[in-house]
Image (cartoon, rainbow, N blue to C red):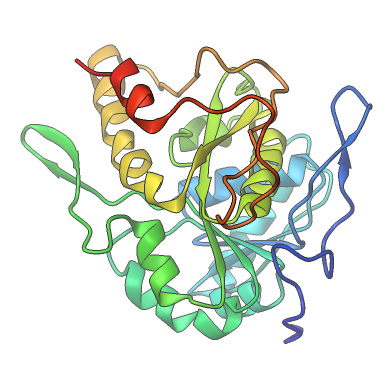
Length: 285
């Protein structure tokens, strides 16, 4: 695997060509490729890898056991609709050879896994879909994370990596089901780098066929990650596989530019955003 680290999330170096929009009018921003999935032998990682392989992305599954990764890659390659069969490698090799890395590992042992990959992840775009959850007799619940969220923990451990959060609320069995239509589900994306958020939101379209919605700064992962516990509880109650779909966000809508001085900032929007105090009151109870 190459050790070249010149690819970054905000650079065009090592970035796959921007993809045409579904209507063919303008390109969508693309993430740097290839895409590695650390934890790619688990249900969530395999499911996301399958959907990306169906969309034509060059995907490499990572695992602590390279042999298991290759076996999982072969299983995905045998599924219907795969345009580009994925590869398999150890976690470090998969991460080092990728431009974008999706982190799909259990929260238990998360810090150790991330810290061990710091060198391989330097200069890369990382997408965390880790959900720190606990379970007891009352059902699922969000764990207290010292850094606030798993994504923020990863950001602290990876100062040279652009960290985002996404794909927290997609059901793994549906991702792996060739006949499952996920186009009605929204993928909420958070991160402190505006360009990275846009690229991950565009990648979400390739995973679900639906929408990627920019949800704000990386600290929003503090809400997005434990929200998965709510979906699990709903699934148990109604014997279903629920997801998220937001109202009030038009299809094809572009996120407003970031505020001046923020990461990835752009000129202020022509229509001012709702003031924070007023926005809070809109959802007050």
